[in-house]
Each structure stands twice: as structure tokens, then as C-alpha cells.
Length: 449
Image 1 (cartoon, helix red, strand yellow):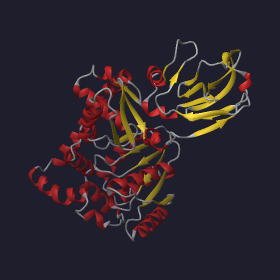
Image 2: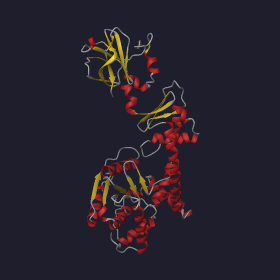
Image 3: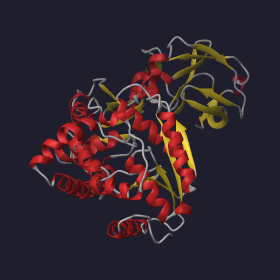
Image 4: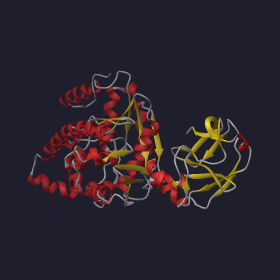
């Protein structure tokens, strides 16, 4: 580690070194660092400082969003600066999806980070105190709760990777002073001055007005974010307890949910809907889930679509379904018919899963093995005489009794021969029907996956 930074004020040097070294101690000794560098003043200063503190442990990545014609030149600039400092550099071009430009650019950027991060490598970003205060203000104006107002953490441990923001307590003014003292070169992104974007508007229009009235606003907002982080940690402990009580990632027991206060219900549903995504749903979306789905009549087929998932109620449970699972029924024709031949030990692929034909105490006649058997979709109105039960009863009633979810019922198929029902393939296994083809020591399809 180098002991001095050229032309760098000793007071600021001691302040930065002591702060960063204290933060580094929270990481394992074998950790290395990938610096996200845009070429702007903040990230270029961070690059220079980290190159003096830990030159052998750092790499740099520049994300080219390809939103401006000059963005490739900025990547070249970052690469050249890294070469001077003998720091490895990655330039990654990404495609930004349609939609909110700032949000989609952020998504593309973090996907690229995740792609290049190595095991035990920490992502280092140059967010500073004013960035933190602006983030809190923008989230407050969007109606965010505790989670949003917690803003950015100095050390943010996520499922995919960990983010470290060593400059988060450093003011923009200090960063400018350090950059001048060190002679740090940087590029200027014109969109940082375009008040069409929320953050640029906040920085150039809203910020001066508020700071003129409240000179210590930046420090106060930064302090608020730390208080909100404490509140979020406490809330997370309660949420984990409530989720363990009420259900899992895919379902919520409504009887247990209703045992909680209204506030805890809303917080639990908000966190549950968020799942592994970056952002929680809006307050209005949670209210819609409470009133349109959870509060719907028990026989209603209400569903709420949010962020590629469908939320549906069945009896006293709330389910989170992927779009593919929920919409599969609508793409399946109920007039589908086919014939199958079955052999012992043979795997048979059905809509409800994979089955293996095995011998059983009571099953279908061996004479049916190798014969063409008819397979049709459930149409509705069918009756079944289940083996071991008295009399025939509606197949619909058997499905309801077995608690097969409505969105899974399109996978039910009826097996027959010469208009004699042999059984039914369901998501919960094969149901043997009473018929002249039942015999002791026969065979049955067994659900294996």
C-alpha cells in the first residue's frame, strides 16, 4: 500500500484512508474489488484513490449504455486512464430496454455487473452524500415507505453480490476538492444537466431552492437515510417472523395473515410481492391485492397481475404464480385426444407430470399393456366411480375434494378403452376407476415428477 497520495492534502488523505480502511475490515481478507466507473468525476476519483490504497486488488468496469454517440469514446477514455494506473479494465456494451430510461439503464448496468463479478469480488460504486440525499428526496416524492427511504447502504449485501460505497459519507464539495488536488481527469455527461431526467432536475432545480433555506439539508437527509436503515432492519426481523408464520415464497395462509394487524398485513404482502426483485410494489398495488383478490368472494376467480406474476386466491390461501403457469390453461385445447401404449417400467409423459407403469396390489389388467388406450381432456360433467368408493360421483367433486388448484385442472386427462373409463391422470397422481379391467396384482401409472 502506498503511503502518500501526490499533491493530496494531508488532512483529507488521513480522513479518507482511515474511513476506507475501517470499512475494508468488514470484508474477508481474500476479497477483491470491481470498480464501476462511468468516467465522471466521482468514479474517476474513486479509481485513483483505490489504485493507491489497494492497487493489486482492483479491476474496473465501464458500462456503455449505447444511449449517446460518444459513449464508446468515454469507454476508451476510462480504459486509457486505467492503463496509466496499471489497473485491468472491462468495457461492456449493454442494450437498454424500452420503458423508464433511468430505471431500465440501471437494470442493464447491474446485470452487466453481475455477469463480470468473480467469487469474493466486491462491487465498488462512487455514490456520495449528495447522491444519497437526492435518492431519499426522489423516493419521498414517489411515495416510498421505510424500505425506499433507507436509500443506499454503504455496504449492501445482496443475494447475487455485495456493493460497497466508500464515498457515501463524503460531500460532493470534498470530492471536487480532492479531484482538483490530484489532477484527476474526467468526462462530462451532458445528460447530467438535462432536467428532463428526475435526478438532474432534483440536483439543478430543486436542490438549490431547498439548500438556500436549509444549509445543512444534505447532512440531515443523509442522517435520515441511516435512521430509516435502522427502521428497515427492525421491520425485516418482524417480516421474517410473519412470513415464517403465514406461508412461503409461493403462498400465504390467509387465516394466519388475518391474525396480524392491518399494518403488518400490508408490510408482509408488500415484501412478499417484491420477492427477489429490486423494488416493492406501490401502496396502491398492495391495496388492490387486499381488496380485489383477498377480499373477493370465495367463489370468485379474481387475479391480480403485477411484475410478471399473477396473484390468485383459492379457498383460504393466496398464491403467487408465474405468468406461464397461470396462462397455460388458456393456451391448452380441451379437445385434445391421443392414444398411448403402456409397458411395465415405461415412463409416460402426461400434462400433469411424468408417470411410471408399475405393478400394484390392485390395478389395471395386464391384458391392457401394449394396447392402444384413449386419452382425452376433461370436458366437465364427467362422473367417476373411484376404486374402493361406493357409487359414481362427479369428477368435479373429486377434484375439489383433492384440492387441485383451478389453474392446474387443465392438466387432467382421462384414460379409457372402448368408452370404459380406466382412470384419471391428475397433478396429484393417477386415480384408478372401478371397471371390469381392475384386477389384483395389476398395474398402475405412478407419478414420479
